[in-house]
Image (cartoon, rainbow, N blue to C red; front, side, top):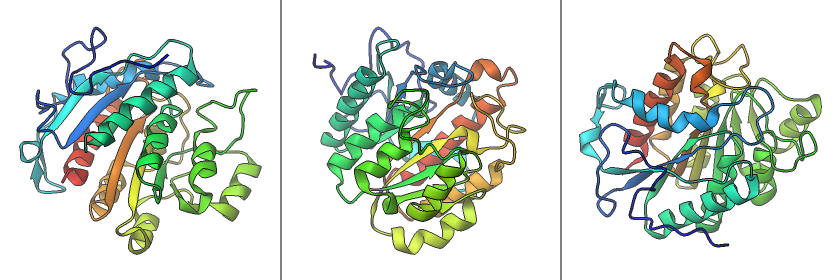
Length: 295
């Protein structure tokens, strides 16, 4: 069954009117489109990431629209918040197909897709669409975990398999992995031999590959658990030893020079973090990404 939607309109009835700070109501004038992917059907530890998109939007209202990191204001750009794609509960493959169809429509409309997860598997729907639009695509993967398994707990569709699917689609030499500090021995061995693998750190190894990425179409998929749980505890599979916010903002500044054609931020589980620091950090990353990547 084909997923029916009007790409120019926010989703209804799932859409509640809660939008990311500064969003326009006019799809046609927007350069970028924010969309939610409220799915956590395959998480392996703590659930709740399907609640992430809504809460990220809500806490964004506490941010300033001006970024001192980029000397740019949200009023300088136009972007549309489409709300959350209605995903069929428990059906991972159909959910991915709906995400793919929606993001494909955004590319057809010449918009920059900016996704809010949701577990990390949702990125596969968006990246499938990006690969179709940009056959020479490169993927920057920022995460605590390798996500390079062929299957996990008997499932081919899992948040632990998403980057292996990307590698199979575009070739592992086009996948740049940063911040990784968790996975099996076999995953680490495979990554070191096949992907562009830079474990434990983000900003400086990313900076070193900017020349080879210059001009290439790039999709960035960012898992909130790349951060140390001291600063972002609200995620399903937290891993100590992660990065902190200043390094993340430097990395976004570095990527400003690249041709970013898609972005997502995933794995925020707001009910795990009653302090809301994870959600606030996620909203700030979205603000910085909007300002850095929207032309």
